[in-house]
Structure formats: C-alpha cells, structure tokens
Figure 1 (cartoon, helix red, strand yellow):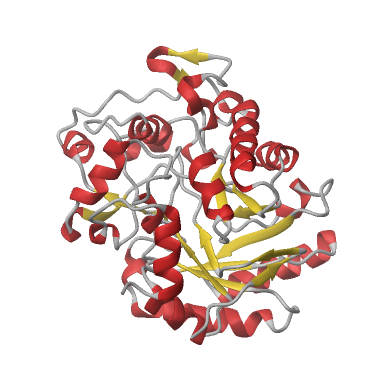
Figure 2 (cartoon, helix red, strand yellow; figure 1 turned 135 degrees about the vertical axis):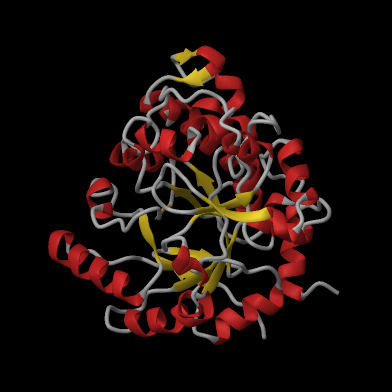
Length: 365
C-alpha cells in the first residue's frame, strides 16, 4: 500500500505519521522539529517545560531544582523557547502541541501553545469537552482530541457543536498498548474488546456522522505492516511514540534511551499513576523503592495535574509524577519514571529520524 499525505484543517502532512507527544522532555524541539522537517507531524509536549534547558525558564524553583507551582512547571517561556528552536528546524512545516486535559492550568497552557506558534493542539488524559473554549481566540488552530471509544467521540462532538459550533479537525483513537496514560481502567486495558483493531472501526463509522474528520490510530503501532493494517481498517494516519524514543534527535537523556533499550518484554508494565489512569512504563528501581516504602519523599511542589489533588493521590500510589518524570529527563535512573509503549522492548539501537521515517514509509528491508 502506498502511504499518502493527508490534511488536518488547512495543513497538509506529507507522510501519514504523527509523532506522539511525550513528556517530560522526550518530544521537545529536536525531535518534534525533525519529524515535521521529514514530512510527518512533530508534536511538542507541554508537560514540564520548566525543566527545559537546565530550568532556565522556571522562574521559581525549590529544593532539588523542582519548578514551583504550575506556572513554573508548565513554563510559558520554556514552551515558547522550545517552539522557537523547533521552528528553526522545520521552518513552516505543520507543528503540534500535546496538552494533557488533566493538567492544572490546561486552558492557559493551550493558549501559551497557540501564542508560541502551534498549528494544532492534541489533548488526551481525560475527555476534553471544553477544549474549544481554550482556543476560541485562535480559530485557525486545529483541534485533535484523543478518544478510546466511538461513544466518547459522539459525546464530544455533540458538546462541541452545541457550545462552540465546532467539531474536531481530526481525532486520535488510542488503544491500550500505548506508552504513558491509558484511556481505560486497569483491568479493561486487557480486554479483547478494547484493543485498537476493535475500537478503531466504530470510530471510523462515527465520524461519518460529523463530516470529513481524519481518524488517527495510536497505541502499539511499530512498523509499516502495522501502519498498513490500521489504514486498511479505515484510519487516515497513525500516531507513534515509542519508536521515536530510539532516535538520535529524541530529546530524552541518553540514560532514558538506554533504560528502554535494556528493557525486556516482562519489564514493561501498567503502573498506577496520580493522574487517575493506569500508565505504561518500565518497572525500574523506583518501583522497588515504592514497594519497600523507601521511595523519595512526596511533597507537592509543582502542582502538575488536577486529579492528584495536591499530592493526595501521589501519596496513594507512592510517587510524585512531576518529580519522577523530571528525574527521568535528567537521566536519574535510580529515581526516574520511564514511560514506554508495549513494544518498547523491541528497541535495540538508535537511528536518525530520517532513517526511521524511511523504514516506516518503505518497510524495514
């Protein structure tokens, strides 16, 4: 099958591959800018921009260089700097920003991204029913929600149409094999009825009720064979995160990349998270410390996600997600939290984004 270009809003993406937004600091300027340059859609993560470039843009930090409060953890200046450097790489190619709906200051973060130059906003970690409100002053910015069921898409379209006379410019349907936070409860992630190849076709059918909305399949996609399979099921394009960790340009610390490369299939688990959804990552020393009740002390410095309730949920699961993801970005393998999709164990070397895009478009041979 020939992999073709597609459109989201007014933007044409020459290759049907979206790079998943990964934070803290996995997909920032170098990765996202290069993916867009190579014809895919690069996605900058808005999470933890206060730690970018050695905390230069976190105007207030506390002990251990933790950005203080949401305005510093989600630094507008940091996000702006990331977009500026990504633009130097990809120039006027389409560039997106991923903003978690669970984020404290969600509306402000989205506005910051729009002002920084995002052509599109992608939002998951909750059903983003109020997403159009955050972008009402930026009508040219395309909106891409992430859903896990056709029912969720139907509810969202009805709400958007009623409140803002707006519909999604594209929709990502994500199965439970993705890295990071899932759209299902823990046990539901393992049910056959919730796997991507089953939930994708009903979403493809549902969008027909709302117009010409591209459907992007995500979660566990690895190679061209997987891409073709999703396109044959009705998807317009795919979103991939984990494979891009194994690139030279990925913004992650070399230690982060090595943790994923060293991981075996049995090391990749669904983990509890203060966000309230299960999250997939590598079970590392951090989780041993949690089980032994010797993990780093939890004190809510950054106030990153609303469901955590200022550290209440963090204490329930045994770790602060802002601190532990920031440690992973800093390459601290003893205390970092390392998210990856279910196929992370298949990463075994580091290649360039250009090489990866060629493999995805033309096959692995």
